[in-house]
Amino acid sequence: MSSRFLVLAVLATLLTSASAMALEVPAINGHITDPQHELSATELEAIQTKLTKIQDETHIDVAGWLSQATDADATTLGRTAYRKWNIGHDWDNGVFFMMPATGRVHVILDPERPELTAAELAQVTDADKPTLSMSRRIELLADLTLEILRPKVTHRAMPPGKANPTRGAIYGVASGLILLLAVALTWARRRRMAT
Image (cartoon, rainbow, N blue to C red; front, side, top):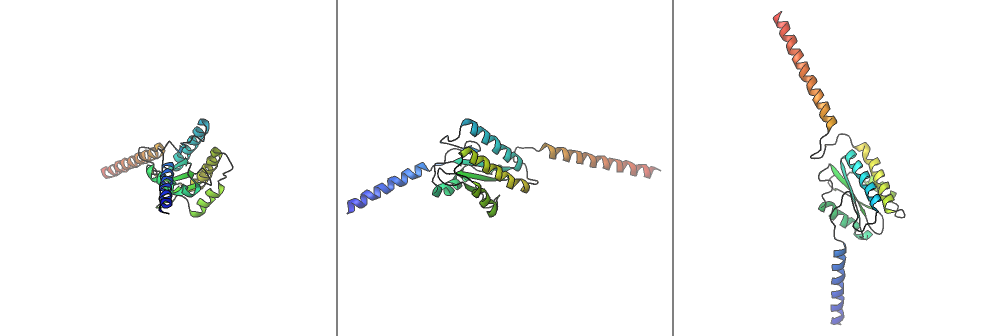
């Protein structure tokens, strides 16, 4: 009886170790991390371009991971990747798509500052169609996320190291006009005092 228990304990330990190794978070690779190369180079480039455009427009870090995790492990593993990869750290915030090998998308948000309400989050997850190709699924999810986020984005701060030339030009013109007005008023006051 004790030998069966020992065999079962060894098997359980081996399975747990194998499962933990299989669920390791890989190094981040752009907006979409695809360690199993489920996407073709062309698909990956198109999705990277789309997500970069969304990030530039909304100032929200958008990323995803096509993982071999099971549906049951996807949220926990996605949160680990979100923290490890510093999603949203250099931007206002982040939206992270965890795409498990089985099941629907898991959307990971910063719990302190979630970019999506519970209803919007449900809208995104309900829109996921696991029967479509992975590239099409990501494209649809990215489009819907942009549609939801775009109206929320008003005057987000630029991320560190990025300058907003339009805002700088407006401030420069406004400063110049204020200075010109101050000089004109001073000159007019002196002229009046002289007469």
